Structures are given as structure tokens and as C-alpha cells.
Length: 161
Image (cartoon, rainbow, N blue to C red; front, side, top):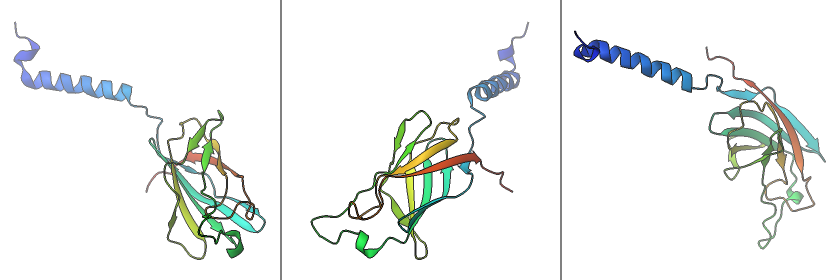
């Protein structure tokens, strides 16, 4: 009587099939790229913060925003006082806060300040969150608006064509 291991090709195909079934069962098929449903803007005292886009990956979140109309007088001009060091956070529906994982940095743009901020992953079921920004980078406390809250809604990314 021949056994399965007497037929190496058949044994390989059966092993491959079992491996594919195990991988299919273990992989979360719901996880996919999500994006900001639409840009979100808020204007206070003439200064506008606009969330242009957001990309939600399984391991991180990237938020792209612009800031317009910050006046020269809003910045600290003293060498001993650099002004605000912004600490943006994402507040999840559970009230948990995700801390930014990088210092915000400018991206190429026109007259506005373009910024990308990286956060940890947002859970798959959290499609409505709030971006909080305590203050605008390098502005002097009390001169520019503080404690910004911008709601964000996410949707599955459209298929690539």
C-alpha cells in the first residue's frame, strides 16, 4: 500500500492547499486602505486649518493639513522663547488619544503651510474621530487660536483603476 509521502508531488500540493486555507482563515479581509471622506476646514480669528487628506493604513495614519493666514505678529520673535510646540492628537470614539509619532513637517506647497503628521493606526471600526491641535507651531501662546478640534470621517479608499 502506497502512502501519501511516497508521492512527493501530491504531498506538496496537499501541504500547499492546507497552507493556503490557514492563511486565508488567519488574514483579516476587512482591513484595507481608508481615506478622509472629504476635506475638513475650520477658521478662527482669520486663521484656517484645513485637513486636506488622510490615509489610514493597517500600521499608521497620515494626516495632511494646511494652515493659512497666520500673521507675523502671532509668532514668537524672541530667541529665548520659541513659542508653541504643537502636540496634535487623534481622539477615538472610545475617548482614547493617539499621539503624533513625528514632528509635523512642511510639505511643498504654495503660500500656505502644508503639514504631514503621522499617528499610530486607527482601529478599523473607528470611522469618526477628532483631530485635536493644542496650538499652532511656533506661535506665541495666547496670540493665535488654541485648542482646535476638527472632526474627520473615513471611508474605504476607492479602487485603483
